[in-house]
Image (cartoon, rainbow, N blue to C red; front, top):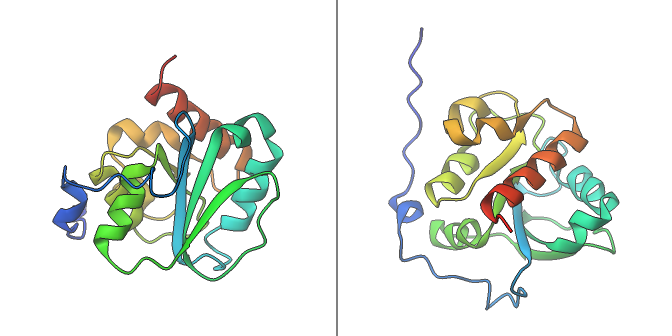
Amino acid sequence: EIPVIPPIIDPVYFSTEIEDIREKLQIAPGKKVLSLGARAITDRYKGIPEFLATLASRSKLAEQCVVLLFGDGELELPANLDVRALGRLNSAEEIAQVYHASDVFVSPSAMETFGMALAEAQACGTPVAAFDVGGVRDAVSGECAEYLVPNGDWESLLDAVEQVIEKESPN
């Protein structure tokens, strides 16, 4: 077996001193925060427009959520989603704030060599849900592995997101 040596993760992601930006972004208490992003949110391999459209079609879940979207580019956003388009984040600190404010980081990517964003989100203590592609399984910790779903199975990805939300906030 060939050992996998993950890339080095910036120590800022492990910090307990990360500013909580939920208030600054005016996210109502009780809302569930999903984050997703890429260098370019319009990158067709990242699956962001498809994920947002699928989320919008599941109205009960969509009502509970605020989506923090980061990366270059602009997308036409579904009208029934509360999406905060944060644009390009320029530092590990800014990205860590988004992960820290999130209940789940979602990677709807059809292609990933490793999944660095998944590793960073988990370093912030944020669970992840993703398509099981490329090196994603190597980037995801054991407890989040159950939230990896077959590539392109949008409904299963949303089911995984719901499972994370329910597990993280038992009512």
